[in-house]
Amino acid sequence: MNDKKLLLINEALKLFYARGINSIGINEILKQSGVAKKTLYNHFASKEELVLATLHYRDMIFCQWFESIFNDQSTGTDAMLAIFYALDDWFNNRVIELDEFKGCFFINTAAEYGDHNAPARQLCKAHKNKIKVLIQAKLSLFIKNEELCQQLTQTICLLKEGAIVSASVEGDVTAGLKCLPIVRQLIREGC
Image (cartoon, rainbow, N blue to C red; front, side, top):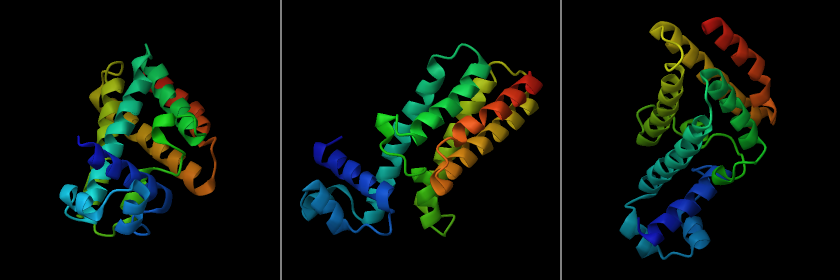
């Protein structure tokens, strides 16, 4: 990817994540990045195109981080618990690649788009589905009953999303850790 394009995406992502998409104008992105307007429009036909690029970029960063959570886990239980320990790290600003925690960029973005068919909202939905697939793939390694695996996946995803919203909206940075007893019980019952 071109250096200027990546710079624009990075700066736009920082601003959108910190203050919301609708409150940030193109001129602020240009000022923050130090890039000329013509250069921006050579890479992106519109602000909406830049928004989509930031979503793709954040998706890539987040998924790399999320997949790394599972890499060192030898059991399914450990992998599921690792999700919530990792959320605790994120909520408490111990995940450098995700920057300071300001909620989930995908939840925040989806909330700014009322139209469920808007491309940005569809990318947010695709991101959430991608994370669900990663969780289910890990669960399926140790839970062979497909229906049970799907139910556990759904429940763990709901707990994860609830913890993110609690940390963001209520400021409860311990929300991830509070899910651990429930996850342990779910896994015990499911195995």
